[in-house]
Length: 159
Image 1 (cartoon, one colour):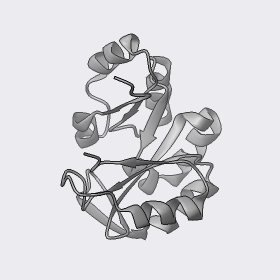
Image 2: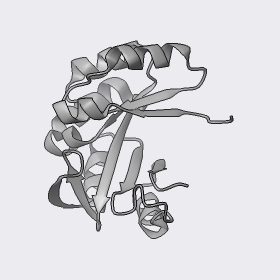
Image 3: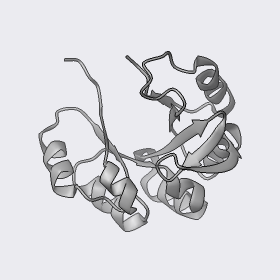
């Protein structure tokens, strides 16, 4: 139908802190004719390596990116363009742990830190709008793109 990429989130993996549905994900990746990216519970280098070797093109780091910047730096060095950093924001502040924990870190502070560590792309979700079928937060997306100068995937709320 024209999609250029498939985005998968292992919500069970996000809850448990490690991917849970690997057989299903492997099966999907093996039949896709377009690149596939995966997020949800990716919290260590070995798991990232495992996911990338099973046919997933890019991995998405979220909670771990906030909690362990050294892992982000190592992942970006080892896997370069295959790493996407998730920016999940509520009112301009980063939220983690399936959007349940507020961090007090601003979107731009976080993006600047991640860029310094080697991040080359982001996926941005304004969690106050996700699932509401309203329009994207165009001003926040534009501000992020303008200040980071790296590709940004706008996620959620696209109807």
